[in-house]
Length: 351
Image (cartoon, rainbow, N blue to C red; front, side, top):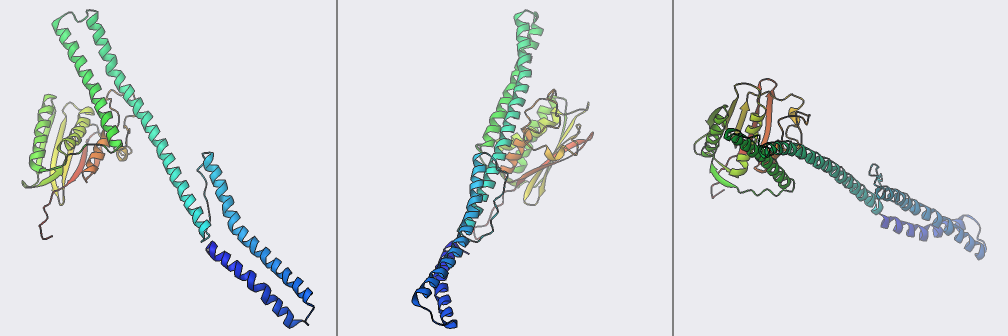
């Protein structure tokens, strides 16, 4: 019952009940002096008003006390409580709104804690992974300064090592920059309609040249129609493919490494499958590999490096293209990453 209705009802009861009660008494009992009737009327009015005031007081005071305790808890930073009020009036609605606000504050606080934890982990990861190439660069520079690189061959090897380590640092910094853009939804996408066959063939040719230089076998199979088109950001989608393939190269554990790329037509989508014959991912780790900062190798002493955000970036880019990504893996056999991109379909003018 609304508070306004309660007050109106209370007013009507105050006006009607004493009058009806006095009239009934006069009819039942012998008429008395006017002064006695007036005193009886006032007594009935007093009792009626007292009951109604107590009723309205209880209606208002109990939820207000709950709200006061809730406000005190929130002021002290405690959000682990619940405001219960089933009343169907303005104060009951206020309590429900307050409870919803508490839940949102709690969700925001938990999100902030998780974000702070991830940020600290990112800083720790990046700091560790930057320290390794910096230490190597310092060591080789000191070798050059001390005259250890006393032959052209040694000097060339030292300089190439310094260059490679600097590239590792550059890649880490670029990954961190991209992550910050992803986290604030500021990735500069440039979507365009292109031929799926031509685009993925170009990607495969680049991969084949790069992997061949590393002694890795690359197999490309295209199963889509020639006229299939997709709307993508070519640069960002290439980042997805390169990131996945880069992981396969990083975690290879066999003398003969093989990486495959299959492109298939699956209805309204183009599906890309990138497989390898690496060490694989355990079943307990597989559901978490696209989480930010997740590493199947928990040890920070791993020589593989990386910030732990590569696959989360991949997932974000694929989802921004309207697709989805998943993986299958078997330890000791290899891993296959799948992602789908929606096909471009022309709609007739009359539709």
